[in-house]
Image (cartoon, rainbow, N blue to C red):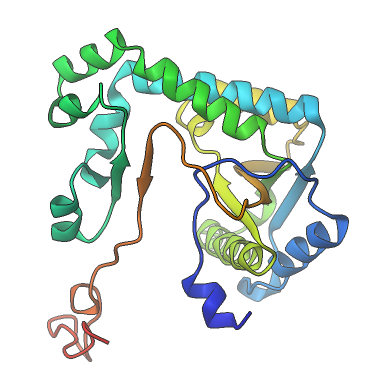
Length: 264
């Protein structure tokens, strides 16, 4: 596969992976790709914990599902991220950003306009939407053959006023390298985000993985091989739209939008 094919073919995997174990060679290649990323002063602040143990993955899955149920049920999740949610193709075409929920059970479709209101949250609770989402999330994570825990060195993060920015910027580059490598290997990857929405749950996972005090757990990702015909979860979204360059690129000065690139 050519590099640009991998770059433009990159996806987030919302659906299940194959149950096959990720080979040792592929695990090593993913970590080698991460370690090849640039970092300020070649500090290499990233650390990884590679997780295959079934009991550990099941616990992470349970915590993730519980977190999703609690956060959705509580209601603040939709308020916090509402500007990223789209519920029609027209809305997605207008914004060219965010997540388009193009797969919803029929029972939920009438509530999309009210999802950000107290009445909408109440209706979703009555329909047990938070529990449905949480259980779907638990099954997805539990079905993952591999999880990467991503950490940063606290001493590096606190070394000087700009250090934390440099560390997180470097970690982002390392994760992008992993992400692109999954495309080459026929794999998928997804951020396990909901435990981070609840500090008490994130603390549980930090303790589960025995993260030492000198490191900080920054993120968890589930990985695996992707089926040839992927299935979609009960509630799913797409996020392939991108803003045209004229909306985020300037020429020479930030008062002059780039022209002529939007149709390239």
